[in-house]
Length: 315
Image (cartoon, rainbow, N blue to C red; front, side, top):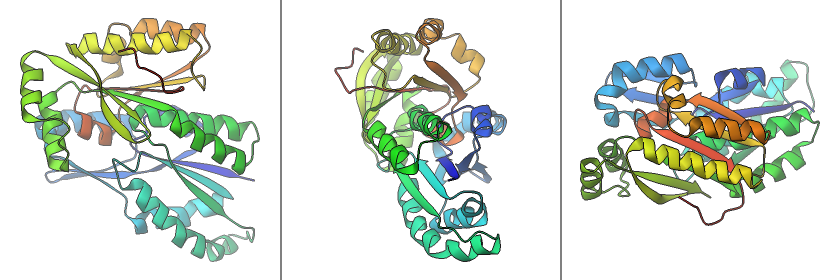
């Protein structure tokens, strides 16, 4: 069985990895004034958009998922021909309509694929499954890497599905915004009151950064640290402890950054994280944050994800 993998563009993994493993991208639309771009996770395009548009009034930008019809056309145009079963992995449905749109599109796809495959000389069945990773950005990458490992090991779709759905329950995602005023404006536009005016002003005045945690679709603060660099170091040290205790459910850790990766590498604690991953055979993925992610988190934000049993977070 030919198993295909699809991820939405907010999923933070290196472009080289996505290309090497033939992972298709379900894009999102990003609009900033008159400028519009389909986010296909192109790091160069993302950084160019960041420097020319997002750095100005990026909180006014709008990101929106592909429509049901656009997703349907993407599958019927290529994926139903190239594969027999497709896993489409999306960010948590609590933060975006991507999952819902993909789920709705799947009904039309399954009703219409036969004629498309027959025209290509293939009369065998096609199936797909939309998976809610229940997380965002770097943390979404955990399920994707595991699906590649299982597919390459020759596992069938039932085992892959069960593993991904279980892994979603235990994926731990973290975010550190650099600019709380930016985050407040973004949440205000989205109708989200999680970052209030007073909290943003006090946090900015005293340079206090929240460490946000996402698990099972729920996001909230688990720590507040003075200065962005100190917050990043604290998060990296937390990840190192979980690695050294052999607590990860998969040998994978993903990190993304809202800017050039050279700046990520200079953050305090990052080299210790890299060394801990190397010593324990944990694969560390570094990537530029998606354009959709930067629109919501802001320039210079940090995201990290791993899979482990939910426990008291030492932050």
